[in-house]
Image 1 (spheres, rainbow, N blue to C red):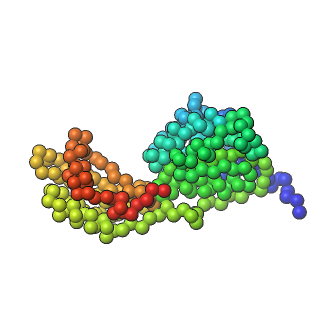
Image 2: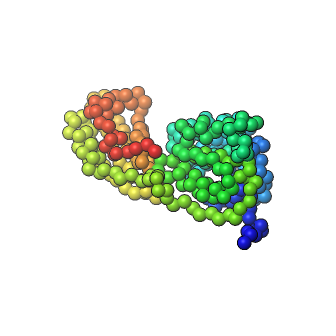
Image 3: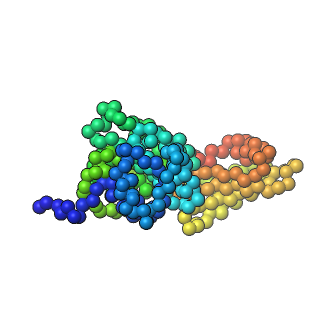
Length: 293
């Protein structure tokens, strides 16, 4: 039985529908030949999906970063193949270091031209592998819904980070029956860690018995994004009369990386690090059994 053509959409339109299904309402990008089919479809959805035309692809990546940081949503950037894709890399690397959730979508030459040094063909998957949380090259249109769902799930879960999806031009033109389901888990990816509270309590006890005028109180609490915070007030003897706050934070949401955020006057930073960390030889990553994913 033949599929009814009226129920089919192009891969390019599927990309736009996937973005809308994920709640995306703003994207940044710069068009080019290999991603033009998606831009053509974007025109049809301009009432529901706003596109900001940057003057350079690197600007699109950084703008998507800023949007993600201020909105709490996943930032989205688009670029064409070759130099367009490589221009995103600086912003992608920055997002990886700063744990910023971002999905970058790049166009690519047709699948039969891959590896042939075709015009503006660049191995963006190989280039971006060290600086992305995950990347994937789509060569068939029916892969688009599943892969984009995974991209958004990976970008915003655990330790947030950038994901790059490369889509060949023939996959953008190919038609298929569209069906989108949100990703709720991946067998080989577990972004939720088990925190060893006994180890954290032992660390607090070590610091409290160290002889330094320091008191550590572990005060776990849940907020809307299910973060755990451990607040520690530090007061050092001598000429420093101020109280400084040190927060051990498991980064939002359900993160597997222990972040240490300092809030004190810069001139006392090294003194505090020496007296509270280096001097006592504590490895807080081992204590929390945190791993970087």
